[in-house]
Length: 276
Length: 306
Image 1 (tube, each protein chain N blue to C red):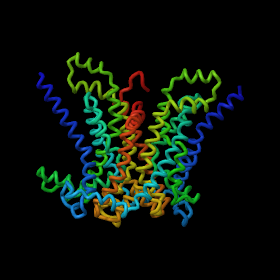
Image 2: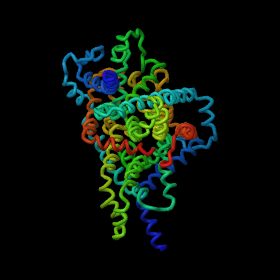
Image 3: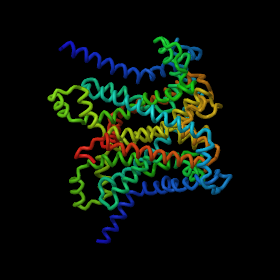
């Protein structure tokens, strides 16, 4: 009986480790390839002949990564601020205020999540183009100030859990709703707001379609588009070590962010799914 | 009283205003106007919208050689890729749910690939799956597969390759499912044990019904996501075939529906691309409706949930 339990534990752990390998070995491969000398990349070698750290200097020369990084960070920060300031009041109105038609309007918010972006992006492009915004960061930042459905949904989930009696007590004391929101609800919802901010930051950091559509000047590229363009010009997987070094630099900040904010990430994912 | 009501309305509207404005300008107006454009010939800056009735749609369904192709590509990803991805989510979440000690570190490791941006993930996989010297094929070779797949260089294997990327980044779906699994009351399992039921009975009569609402949620969101999949197909296709190759190379096997549509847009065929968008929209609605109707058959709702 005891040995059987031991065997089951061993089997379980082997499967767990097997999956861990599948999920993480590609990332290890990414780092190892990025350190290889050029002539070793197109070989079956898995381990660099010598660790050529200069690839990481070279990649900054070949690709204007610092400029791309600056562009990316600017878009990330502005769109994250936009998402937070616009979503908090909307989510609060859906969770804590009682008004007629609330359920129906919220259903409308949720239904927009089903809408394929293919339907909306062309008229949006037309609007932005009439405003003279094509080739600027504005189409990638301004829309975030208009509260997206996913963030509203996530924050509302959290606002629903706030203790009603505490808020009601403040209401009886004559506090207005805006005041309640800014002084009480928003501070209590800090973890959820962090999750929303993180998701938006990560989305803007990784976004490929938006920058591909709206940025036509190389000087305005984000990391996502800049790295893709570099690789595409190198063609047929040439200069793989530099491409992968750029990818590693692109991924690294997110991994660091994740390590520091793991709880907020996982809270956020849970918040988005628990109630369906 | 009326005054109070009016003030209340002002309060609600002011709090909702970011969403209201965004909805009107960036969602509702685009929906209406793109429906109109889909019945016109229209190019930004050169051709004003001219009403041509159903012409765009008839051309799309009867003449455009890319349409059937792109539709099949996208439906393959939905019918084969998505179920596989959900299966892996179930297996990994199930493993993590039963494991008490050390689950935290595995959870982090399984989740990591989800954080990798699509550009980095797609480029990384084109290297991993490189036919001659890529490590996956070296491994297959070592395992005795004499002619391993050419992946992104073979029209028959490019979509399975794309599916591998989506399976690799299954972490967010897995976490949602895991939260659902951990919410299942342990007493239910104990009840099955008392009745002498084994693991299969537990899964069939406790686990599956209890997580079926979550499963429904990830199935619907997964379906909507896969129908819109663009990044990985676009990036790995041009990485493997080079920038001059037609979109969706090799041989259009990676031309997903959104890729085809963007291509029409980039050729400034706005009216035609709008018709494509509407076909996609209606398809999404129909497929989601089918899943929702099927829900009654397999999604368990207890008294507490709606």
